[in-house]
Image (cartoon, rainbow, N blue to C red; front, top):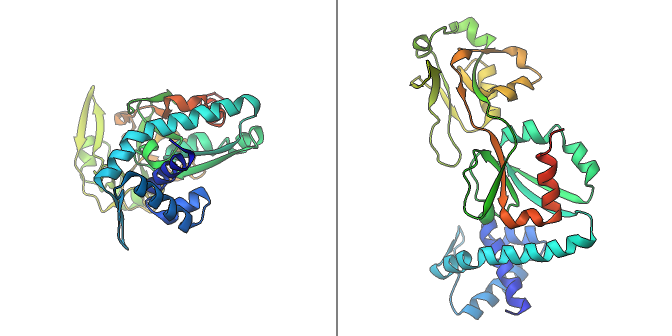
Length: 297
């Protein structure tokens, strides 16, 4: 494979990850016509169209799907191998792209960003906040964060936190209007701020623990959100009773405005993990980020 085809493959993968030629051009810091020309070169070399392009969207053809699936791991491995050798003579530097849910950012990143920047001045972090489950390989990320250690083949997950509870809270405004429930049965007469998962598009059920059993509770939902930031705001304004992670509430500057509800019945949630491609941990800049955030302060 000559260098022009290798470069064209790399650009093609970036187009697919970004969803557009313009997006790929921005990420690669290239002119859009140059990206288009590279795609045309690759299609001519293969003899088949790889993308169906309209003014509204871009979709992979069957040939495009096959090319992505058959070259993704090989390109990543080759890139990693080159970077690993380069790292022998250099201190960690370069861009590290990561997808991070709100809770991981607030608990792990926000308190230590300044420390990281001081320790690794040549590493540039690109942090994409996303509460959904992300395929980091397809989306072009180096690292991801999620609950649980169930990851795809050829990926590694490292534990960052112990399991913690998903708390239920109300505001003083809500308490003054409606009072607070003191039993699970009474809770069902109140309003719940619903939460929809970003990836599955499924509304999270309210589950409580009672005498060793998990109980699913049905409640009216005046509002459904997919962001912890919005959920917190809705709780504070008295829209309903809402869920918020216990360690996250503990670091909120206005935590005194929130009242725990039925605390002894709170559900235990999983631990947070960082996940990444197995071979990528050999790359200096990625290894530095992994080790920094998996090391206790």
